Image 1 (cartoon, rainbow, N blue to C red):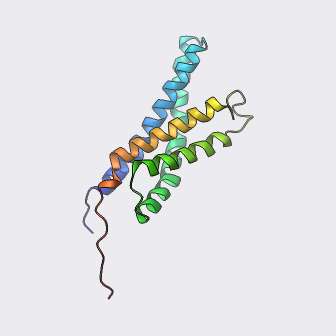
Image 2 (cartoon, one colour):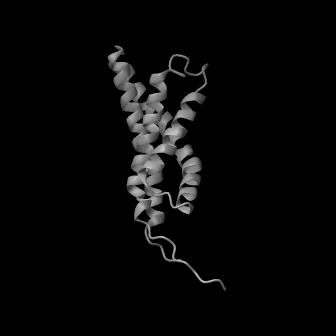
Image 3 (cartoon, one colour):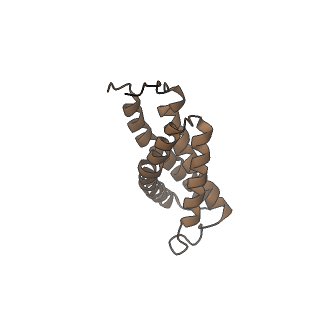
Length: 146
């Protein structure tokens, strides 16, 4: 089978999507901490920790749930960005509700934390979709039965 570039774009989307979502999450988290009055040294530590935490979670979800969703969406011919964004919203919402209360009691299950996690998952989906662009794939041609 000839490589039409889709595999390379899928790999790039699977790397840059989670990186962009983690960057958005880390920067927005640090901005919130700065508004709350955190010292500069703490902000730098928050930035690094939030990025590492975010990219690990985003990579795991992208290469499991996201890849399974992409296979299902491709088979069902759901190629629009809206389909990917809606799925990212649902996964982000489920993830935000699954944050253990004993791990992050100050932010778990608050509307702000849910919106933050959902926005991060939407950035992952949007960047990944923008790189991969499944809407530009050619549909499989019909084949005759043997």
